[in-house]
Image (cartoon, rainbow, N blue to C red; front, side, top):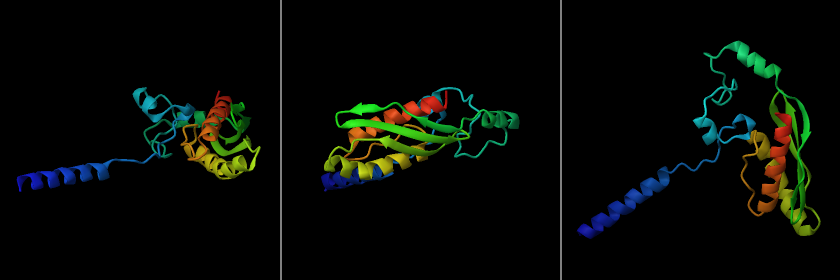
Length: 163
């Protein structure tokens, strides 16, 4: 009887731990493409808010006005990233320091298989780039090679935009 109770308590504890594990991959974008973990360790000298886009009322308004005046706008095309299936190249549109669109202008489409995979993957990657505001995006299942090359070209375009 004691073994049964111990086994049940162990199972219950395991289930509680399993269900309480935080699995969300939605992270706040950090300016410059840095990961939130690396930014957390550094001092927050950036005038851009890290609290879901809501400016901190204690922040000096002149700093906020300065950063928006210096914000970049335009269209930037990243370097083509070669894969074994073909090149992937991304173009982003930035308005006042915010990525408003991301488009794969070049991606593998040499055969029906490539076309089928990328017809699904490219729009997902485009939307993920705009949502993340960085190149820290998840790979699309079934299109890992394209996803990795997309992120690499996206980072190149972001580097050009925010130099």
